[in-house]
Length: 236
Image: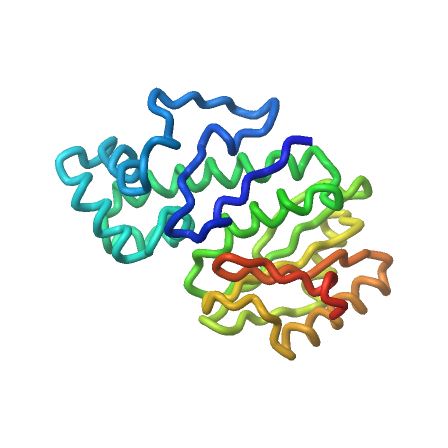
């Protein structure tokens, strides 16, 4: 199995974008003309922005880094927030790149057992959720082979709370004929430690799913540069 790189391992402001390393075997193969490892974040952003705004690329790259702090958080930011800084055209271009990144990271989860690919799961969820300014609750729905059927956002909330309804989680699992679930949500404050409400909600979902013979493998909380596993900490 090809291991997935952790885009955020050295912090969102320091980690360089490795587009070529993100592509799994059998997936789309990109060979950039310039080795991206040789470029710092500002240079990478300039090259991306120059495709749309060649005359303002340097200034806009400065503005993005000042506002969001690093390439990982820029790519994961909502389009409306990006557009306020660099305009709609550049925001759309960055959004397309982020969508490609997520498709690439999601690809192996649909081909392999998720239970043997936790590094890939963590990298995918961090790329998807870590930069969001509000809490969102996602569920990874798995089939009988523990391969990904779908990743769906079931609720969106405020900076410190997203409502979760266990019956809705189970209902959607039945609609998708899912055999198992992985729960995930982000903490925009950066600290992935679970609250009492997080732990209690997890237990409610586990109980509701168990009644229908649906397994809940874990609940992962995504911080800025860490992922907290309730299963690993004995909290579910």
